[in-house]
Length: 172
Image (cartoon, rainbow, N blue to C red; front, side, top):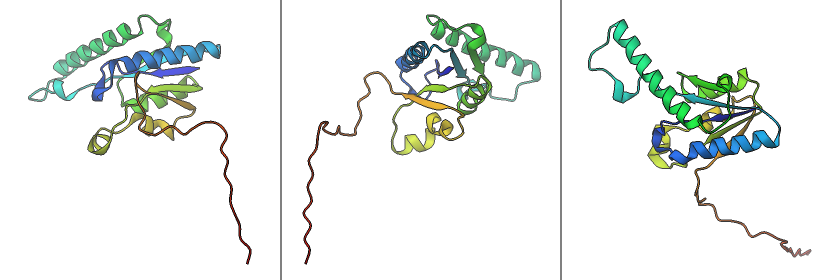
């Protein structure tokens, strides 16, 4: 069972094509292992841009929640449109992403979670956090981290092939 963790809102400057890459790789792994593909998306119940200027009453809060859920559902369904993932394997949750991924992976007895990671450095990494890092230890299965299409590593490649090393030893 493979769980593709996606975010069609492209929060935190995540490239839009990363979700497609996650789903494509998740589908390929699922097909190769003759498994089942699930998808999970966690949406923010009250993003900062939707905060009202004064506390809403219960009816207004419920209406705002329905509006946010509907928008999240539309984006999620649009993203999953070309993938053959039945509704029973599409998980849309209103909890933090790391919790959503961990909860769904546990509930479906997932074997692999495929999720995207964008490299950040300095203050951006400290302030934004990293979902992949947050789920690494508590995740009950393997983690497949997908980098954005066109990602270039800053780590130099090591030459491949045979290497000859010799050491001289001197005995007094």
